[in-house]
Image 1: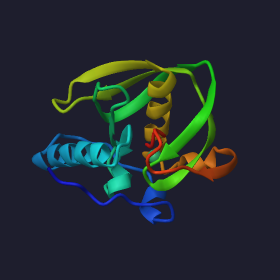
Image 2: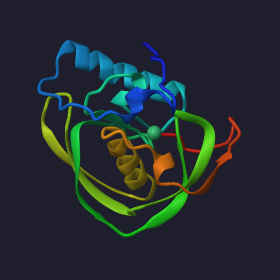
Image 3: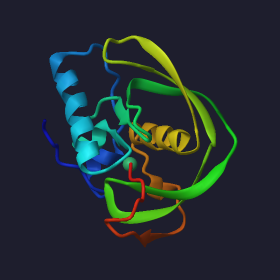
Image 4: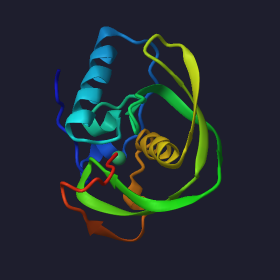
Length: 160
Ligand code: ZN
């Protein structure tokens, strides 16, 4: 178990575009395991490569006990709309209102480099959109409606 340092807003690496993963090497496997460890430790529901300083198209998400390892993910379909409170492990202690699709279907590759699809509504749809944005250097603060507000550490705010 290895916890990696989470990069915070203002760190240039969060604004860079990530490269595709061509092959799941032992290094990538270790990265994925560390990303889960780091996300669970920080009580987040999603984490993307750049948040731990790695510019690769890798995302981990777990909003309800089902973990998704998403390599080279892409949204295939998005519809509906939801506006809700969103946070990010790279913007600690803050949240803000963001409008996202309420339903998305995405493709990704797992650790065996097998393609799969994931379909999500509500929080899962929000997490997928939020994490995939990270891979292109986009932060939720770019999309926030109104001001960010402070959230307590012990709140059940979902941070991605
Ligand atoms: Zn985030």
